Amino acid sequence: MHETKSLPGKSKYMIKIVVPILITQVALYLMTFFDILMTSKYSIDHLAGVSIGSSIWVPVYTGLTGILIGITPIVAQLIGAKKKEDVRTFVQQGFYIAILLAFIVFIGILFLIDPVLNLIPLEDSVRLVAKKYLYMMSIGLIPLFLYSVLRSLIDALGRTRVSMVITLLSAPINIALNYVFIYGKFGFPALGGAGAGLGSAITYWIILFIAIFVVYKNKPFAELKIFNFWSKLSFAKMGSLTKIGIPIGLSIFAETTIFSAVTILMSVYSTEVISAHQIAMNFTSLLYMVPLSIAMGATILVGHEVGAKRYKDARTYSWLSVGTAIFFSFISSSILLIFREPIASIYTDDQYVITLTVQFFLFAALFQLSDAIQAPVQGALRGYKDVTVTFIMAIISYWIIGLPTGYILANFTSFERFGYWIGLIVGLTVGAITLVIRLVHLQKKIIKNDAAA
Image (cartoon, rainbow, N blue to C red; front, top):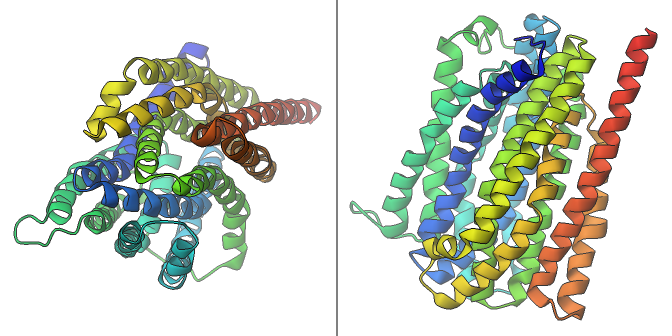
């Protein structure tokens, strides 16, 4: 791990770590982005169906892959402490967990999707598209989870450019497959929204095989012999992984499901409103890749410094990450405010949907600052392996404060559909404030204990 002494040196190194993560996250996100965008050109009913389907899919897979993210701080601290020999066993246990999670989700989709969709007041055509989309996406469950383990390993070693290159290949592959399966090209039937799901699933398999080849053949990964000397199931090591990973996964699940819950609650409105909401959420999520990537970089950087017992450097990286994310939040807000109508026009030609989307963008601009604070602070806390309190804070902020506020404003005031977005702003703001307080308290405690020792 590269050690830096000065603030400019740390800034330069953080950029070196974060920029490839950002490109990787954008490339991964573009799969969902193009699912929505390309389906919107096919049919507004299929767009609504994919919107509902992805609102169920995204929190499930992000929450469960969040469990696998627990590998990142563990491996980062092992590398920082120069204990490379322990990395292989932890990663192999991560593979076992990944396969188990994939089967659990597959069974859940198979048996629970009809009851879940029937609870949502949808047009029959929209419900059918959502169901077929989820069935197709489930084909890619195993490679998606296994790749998450490999990516956590790659990033924990500070080789974020490798993840970037692998994932960059996914975007053109996904676009090509979507083109074939959504619109029915080269003799294939036009599947619409279901075709978007199939294209993404096949892309996940291709990414996995590329990642396996890279880790098996190239330094420094080959030196760890990840695929050699397979260890038996170790409940102790799996317990160590899940002790860190489950709170991370649940925290991510709490955050992502709040957005999905809003989409589902808004299903009482017209198909045009659902589509406009999803377009606004889709583009806003793309902008969120910046603070999210900084957060992931913070986990790696802080984890390495904590493992090496350089606690003051860990604190510096924490707040450097927050400051950088805040700077970019002003750029994101400006983009949403200045270019909101041209952005909406990229997705659809329906003037009413464009008008609604522009209105949603105004609210989206308001929660950019809260996102910029809470994401990197969470990333820093994960680097310290402080995850349980973060999860509790997420539940309170999003589900006990944010969602009820949105529901009340949407159903009992003139804000109506926009009330849910105001609730999101309130929840994210409360989360940002409480997480900052937690990070400050933790850092003071660690540095005080280190000085006493």
